[in-house]
Figure 1: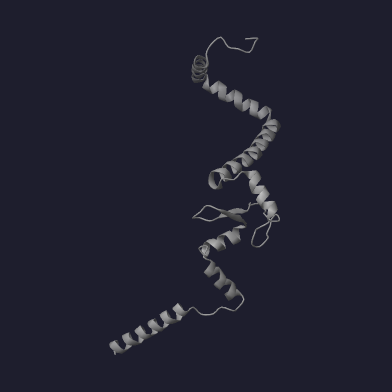
Figure 2: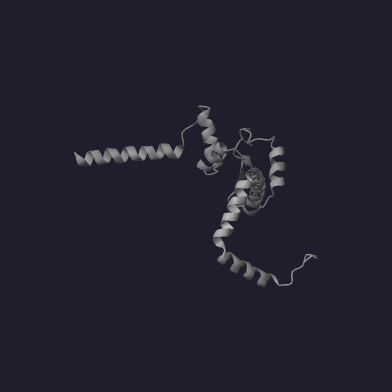
Length: 166
């Protein structure tokens, strides 16, 4: 109608459209394909803009769902860290920084690059292991008492087994 209203309800209109499409499916598909061929540039620019917009929207939804923060809060945290990884300072490239969090409390500790995030995961977030790794890298690592005792037990048991087998 001229005033923008329909003379039928949405349900009736939808049912009528579905009947028409079922009867004219091939023609409808051909019309869409023809329009796409005639409007390649417009369609390409629209799809690029849509993907960019959805990328930001999906990232925001992921951050809210997983960590309870918005994309704006992520960006604020990144700027407070100087724009890079909290540990090594590496700036994000194609891949954004990971949100590092305590798996028990859910508390966000900062943003980390892939390498630092994986390293923490490999050390199971254990501060003692991290300190020992730092000592090892600095060639200052002292042996663990438990490891020395365990090694001695293994050697003693191996000797016993050798004597028994003779």
